[in-house]
Length: 561
Image 1 (cartoon, rainbow, N blue to C red):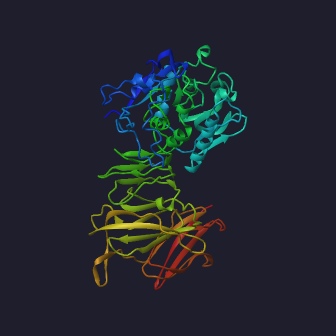
Image 2 (cartoon, rainbow, N blue to C red):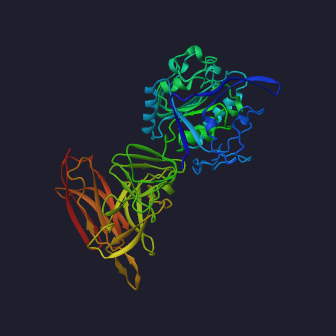
Image 3 (cartoon, rainbow, N blue to C red):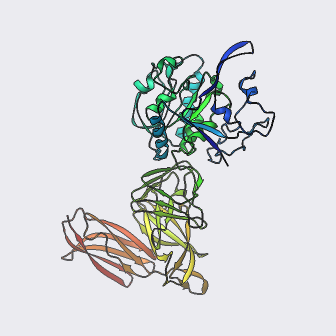
């Protein structure tokens, strides 16, 4: 099914330029864009005529049925052919955009930017809302303010100026630009000669100027209308698309940034976002950009294996379908969840593989925990609690229909469960294992539980006394070798406790003097990790000893500074 039609450079921009039409007692010039006419191809009514709407008495007779469909930012309204229909039965057949610019090299750059669009969520929308503007555009200033409010509600980055001054530069990268341009007194060629903005790949443009799509060659200054800015200038400066007008569209039909920019920010493509912010069809609005260009991982179901690297913004639920579809996050990546961002890691979903040194940031503790299939054991990774002052985290587990039980405590943001395996030829019990994590503060108060993750595993599982149907994972006393070793200045010590009771873990120097007490409290049976910072000690050989019940063990560690 065809959803988008992309027009390449060289295809006419307008039809019937300078057509004089007398209606409602006035004569006006119409330069109707080619693109929005093509949206109405393949209508079910054989008597439908585009000209009736383009040159009819009411030039706003064809309301866009796709406009502002996603009022709650759900990401449930990606475009479908002939799905959105007006009250009179006119169907929106296709979304039309063009890959166009002053030169073919500019068009190539536009396409390349779409392929490497900035998915970090770190770039800003620049909103220049002036006090001084031309007559009749006060409502456009109000739309800029509404754009700021909507972006702020979505936790997106923007900078807005409400004074007479101009925003000429910005310290970071820019993902969107809006102003009143000439109406605010900006000079001829201000986009090229005045603005000093670093546009990120995927950056979009929409100014409140009637003629910002009057021509596509910004070098021909003498041909532009009213000395207003042009989208072609923005493309020539490294922009990746936006919207414009072939002539004077009138305020009611201007694309609204208060919809366009927020929808683009949460993962809609540049084309879907533009058309949802376009009040009327078959008029003077033109969309420039690749329909595959997005700047966030919005709500979607993966159609194939996918790999993320670097910094990635997730704004909707990323569904990894079965069987065995995989989302891989490479080493040293940073994943930020905003808005409705989540990556479910539960039974019935495909696999998430998380590399080393991957950090997650989340807006909600209910979306903080992830389960990785990067090794034979279940590995849990979680984001810092967004509101709770955590100094450590407690890990809990449930096997099949058993009770939840405390599993381990760690000061870090991950834990590998060495008792369960995804593949294990020596193990003999199939089980479904569930996990959640609780944050712990200085007073040893726990937060509410995180989201649950789950998987089908193979485990070395014993049986609870008196209940042959409830499997549990048995613990044993152990003291792990610290890692790294040698170390400077911090190392991690792991241990496990077979029974609930008092646990003491202390560090001694080579003469047997106690130099640190790491643990001295009652703990539940389970596995633990604790960090030891020896920055206050000199280099040398030390020993750490654990005592719990009748169990005692000692291991050596080496501090090298």
